[in-house]
Length: 150
Image (cartoon, rainbow, N blue to C red; front, side):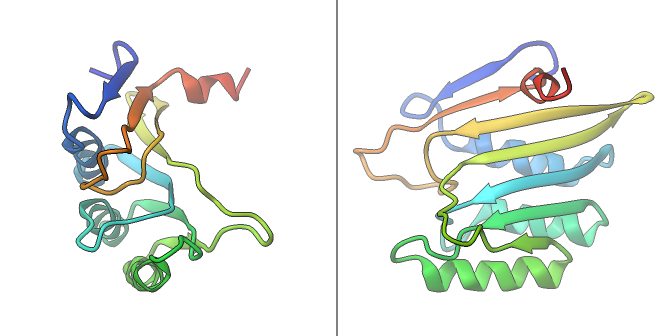
């Protein structure tokens, strides 16, 4: 569906499974060559991190920027960083002096003789349960990455 048009997901009306499925499907897709993602706050039993680890073990190129200074989640993020590194992911621990708070994923997929890029940009954290005050929106598009090549 993302190949044909941009997708906007408003999570009070759609479950967060739309996002976790996007990452899990990419991790299991043999045509996906690379996944690049930022993580700020991650659930304790993260489907996304498990999917990324499986993708790395399957030989996909994985780069994850994982913010270690997510308030109250530092220990959990350190544990996830170790798990991702053990699986073969290249983990970047943020940038010195800056906090990485972005929610972005880039999927690079071989389609026929071309590399196609799909991007997810979200306003919420990559966690499955959110407080009622947090109403995330997700956008997925094959066109946004193309803008960088113009």
